[in-house]
Image (cartoon, rainbow, N blue to C red; front, side, top):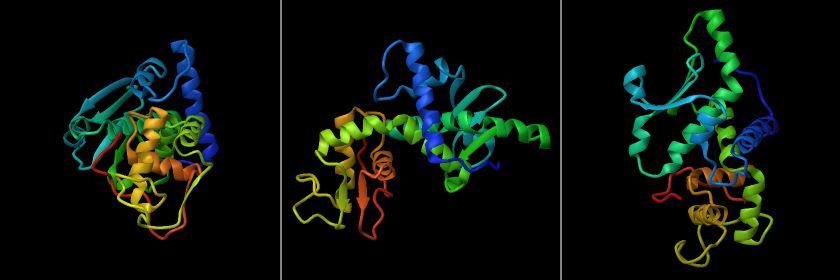
Length: 232
């Protein structure tokens, strides 16, 4: 499905708007951890289900699917069995992004081509525009900018961390926090603890820090692209 280009600010505003809507329903300020599953049902009026999507859709690597006409978000049930909560919750938030940002395009595609009005998310499609937009929405929803900035300053007492080295010049990552690529997981873990981001993976947090300019990588090594054995 082809979707138009969207500015990051517009995507962030859409995520912030959903939080505002949920706060109006809940009657109190919403802070991390963001209750995405409850938002799906209470704010959006959708059904959240967990199914063996790979079998149902006959395709490998399916993480989630948004059925527009049925007002249904379906998550691959295998994510319930794969350990840390972060991957599961991020997938839920990703599907919410599809619902808010892309459902109109699914409806148009259905009318024009007669295809089923379902948006299917597969691991191999992450680079597509529609998937990147949903990923960015999920990051903004689970890790609101203001909450991340407050937690960052509490954890590190700095405006940004700059990574000049790939490996620590001080000691093992478990003992010291040295701003370097090697210590990305420790940096992310400190952020999750400081901000109460208990349903966010370390991988998602480190990406969000880079998106917000709070973590600046001056090396040639990618930061956070390998999943850590631990997650917050």
